[in-house]
Length: 202
Image (cartoon, rainbow, N blue to C red; front, side, top):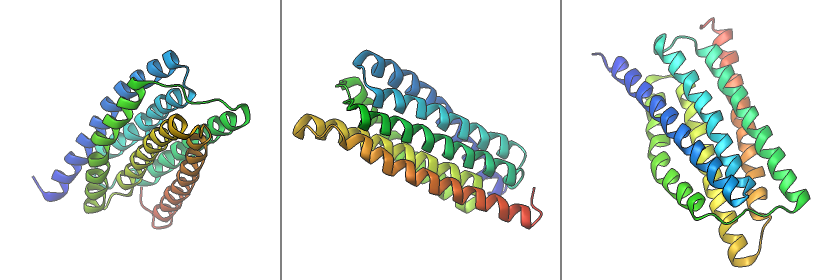
C-alpha cells in the first residue's frame, strides 16, 4: 500500500469514527438537555448532527480517491459551517434576549469533558492526516471538529461561571464568538473550492 493510500484509509477511518461518536454524543446530549431543560446542551447535540453530515461528506469524497470531488465536497463542508454558525447564533441571541440560563446537568458536564478528551486528539490527527494527504476537504472538516471542541469549552465555561459567579450570559456570548469562527471557516472552505474550480480540479 502506498503512503497516499495509507493516509487516505486513515482519514476515512477518522471520519467513520467521528460519525459513530457524534451520533452517540448527539443522542446523549439532547436527552440530557431535555431532562435538565438546558437549551445549550440540546444545541450541543444538534451540533453533533451537523458534524455527522460533514464527516459523511469526507467519506463520500475519499471513497472516490484522495484528491477526487474536492470542489463539491469543500462547498458542502462550507455550507455545514454556515448552518452551524446560523444555528449557534440563533440559540445564543435567543438565550441573551430571553435570559435563559443553562440548566445544571452532571451528565451534560461529563459528556463535554469526555468529548474534549476524545475529540481533541481526533481533531489533531485529522488535520495532520489531511495536510499530509494534501486534501483540503479533510483539513476543513478537522476545523469543524475543532469548532465543536470550542463549543464544549464554552459550554463548560458557561456552566461553571453561572454556578460560581451567576454569569448566565457567559455561555451564549462565548458561543457567538465560536459562530464567528465557523463563518470564517466556511468562507475559507468556499474560497478553497473556488481555487479548485479555477485550476480545473474536480
